[in-house]
Image 1 (cartoon, rainbow, N blue to C red):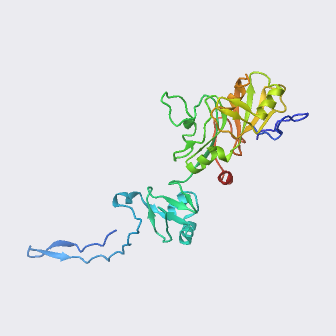
Image 2 (cartoon, rainbow, N blue to C red):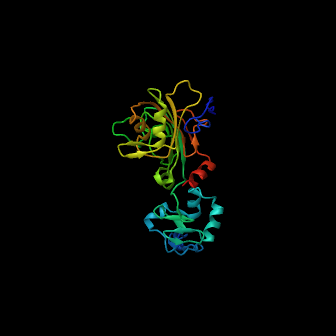
Length: 303
């Protein structure tokens, strides 16, 4: 557990005292030789006919049947509930397939079908949420034509599902980076209207003047407009004024570096220590962990 920075004196421009680093069978016949050497046709009894279910209106084609699964299993794979509980949800009428309410048990769906529960489109596989404490020299991209190290190399063994980074951290920026296959949540966490907050620990090339703290707190003009931070303060417990804590909700590219560059400061180190309420607690640099269910629930409620 990271220790909270300790400081003395009056706090400046933001409270960072809590800053935390089958079909029916047909009769069959067989030949049996008699004593006189002739062959007789022996008819075998037919097997009992098996009941066949009438195809449902939304059933998929024969070519796709190999990839179809029962709806209750689909719901369970999507992380909604157990299979038994899924049957209850289906009967209650809160599940739709391709826009139509389905209440019949035993229904099968394919991965090309659109399944919705309580108005939300479900994933075709179990949702996965992985949090990484990104080190330097890794780029935030799924693939790189120049064969540079990417963050995907770090989470390659996290799960069998295909996950993607939520947002970006540039090559030299360290800290928290979330990965998921939940596109709906990823969109929420990156869309500006939801105001997802991030906290950064910044080390500058020189001490930050008090009047520049005031300027940044009031808003500074960069090449694509005015940008404001939510909070800014010196990191308490440090002997110099080069270490700064900034809380911000803007998701613009390289926004922290651009803010300080506009005032002639160079960012030497940049570390994201909080993202959407998630922290680096018990997560060493270069390591990852799966989110707890309570953390996932909180993220889904944001915005």
